[in-house]
Length: 258
Length: 338
Image (cartoon, rainbow over all chains, first blue to last red; front, side, top):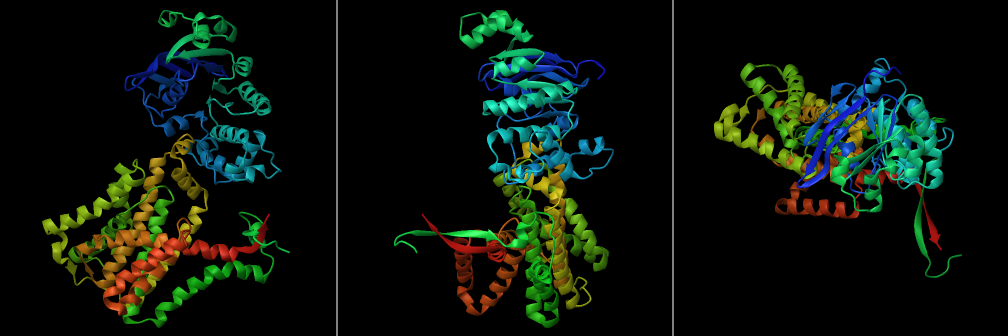
């Protein structure tokens, strides 16, 4: 992939819910092929940041540029159609449908049709291919079972499969590992790493810092909706602001963020 | 041997042919072909033969039942993408007045007014309801409930389109048999087409919108465009019913926007069962003839009609059709609970 400017640029993005500053003046840029981790204590605005970028929540101020074009406040389906896919922290699946049917829905989108040269093609097979890649064995019953009957780890990977079906250029993972067992994380992490090595830009929001720090190039730390640190995993862990946010040591956060 | 006081539960097993595959039927014998074909062919054939044996009053009842069937199918289609309408009479009335107006003022023959009213009615419905597509559940229902009243009172107050007297002496459909067959054919085509559409990927997306619209949006699909398509389809079906009714009775009046046309289709779906279209169709085919048959009872008619409706919903909440389908598709055995 040729590096032609940042794939994502967030400029002074803010969101207030009433008097609550959920996200306050957050700015960052993302290069093509980069793997960015976003961490922060509970309620620090990580999921709101994802919702702002993907259009599910309209920002109070600030702007978002994707592939050089402004996408601030655009409808979620338009942003997804440009190639910015996401997973949900609380998986949003169609539980009474067979697992593979869940993946067919993004395959029905105009984006996939365009990328396939104006044809949708055989959607069932395409869905099974994607699921097989995510560890749903093609020859087992698993892809055909109703999504509601699958274990939680599978549901998270099904959500990932659905995001990948859109053939995204940027993938945002909102706490993909929450609720997964150690072995499920261990089997999913290599998939994510491989996707990044194949050139997919990934933003990963995570509470499991050990796993996150192993795979990401750069980390962004949020607290009370503000960016308090940014840098490589080791740089970030040395920052006083991060230590105070995670360990509760009294440090002037405003001054650190400034 | 069973111990005294032991409990039983029903165990259900799919009949062999259903379990073979979800999408592909490998039909092996005449027995299996008939097993699949009969439940579809028998009612369809019966309905197609019915107009030959019915005359006058009961023929009108058949047309009426098909009208309500179409409105119920249209309701079920909208409900399958999460839009709960209480304004089926909007679709019905728009079709009726479009056909009536074009025939009365421009003297267009029914051959032209029927298709124009069907397509035009669908377009107007989706245009009128597009601004409120973002509303869900009861909010959308409230708006659909208000719109027909708005039209009805508007026609009443302004005297447009014949005002309270309506438009009469419209062109008939050649012969009563023609309108009966148009009604039955329209009803059957709509039923089988909807059942096919909802099982396609297009229908899958519609049902996904009902279950979780945000997840569908994150899949890069414009849910508002899909919903307006669904509104157009449902609106067209309702408008076709209205247009046909107009020419059948050679009259259109403000009563086409009456609440009956909004509520009875919902009752038909509640009776027959939601989500399969066959339930909606069956419900209408039960309710309309039943209400006519009860006419002999005079004053108590509506009371008995309502009691039957309440009883059926209490005893078969899943709907008559789903109950029948379950009995047809599955074995039931009693198993002891240990």
